[in-house]
Image (cartoon, rainbow, N blue to C red):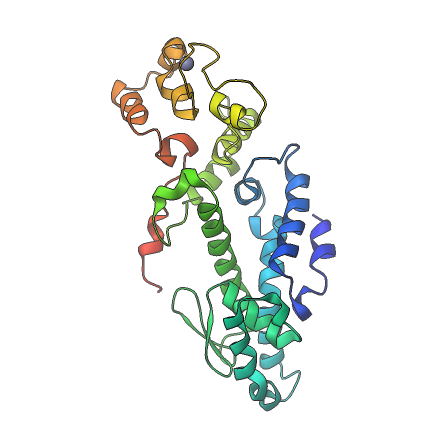
Length: 287
Ligand SMILES: [Zn+2]
């Protein structure tokens, strides 16, 4: 993705506003899938063969100011006393919540920290989104960058949950568990698992399954009835698990009835409709 170095150039100095991140992600998303409209950019770029941290410009754009601040302190680009002198006033800016408060690299780093849920403990020391103490004189810039990019991933997933009504059941601070899906997308193709299956899985997880209800809401068709059996408000759950006219298609998988019945009984559960469940590792303490 040669486009990413272009769009992220200079972001370490003065950062990138949330609106600019959104614009640049949309650009990268359009390069990733042919028809990105209505699909989750976080999913589409997170479920590719290469790492999302390379493909998605948000990782660099949102973490660069923190990484550059870390480099400035670690390598003493300036006398540390100069940086520490304005530290407190810079980290007071994020309370305004506006990117317009950014006037220099330090305020850009402070605002980037606030956006990722990081805070200042004292000059030269930060607390990460999961409570880890990040001392910029003890942790090398590379490590700080890795931690910041983890925070970016959490933020992107959290934004995805907040902006998608079908994931509202996840609860506070829960993000989708993408790791099993990433392993599935990246595993070697075999007779029963090829590029077509991967594309279909990615479309389902990204919320691009074209149910009658969804096409009606988008104005593509004139009514929200199932095109096969005529059921009203036919969503993804009906299409996959409940439509009586698709019974033969469902039977070919040979799955026990309880799976079909459970899935049909929980039409709003994203596990059945999007293959997504809350990340259980989020409850583990930091090592
Ligand atoms: Zn139907």
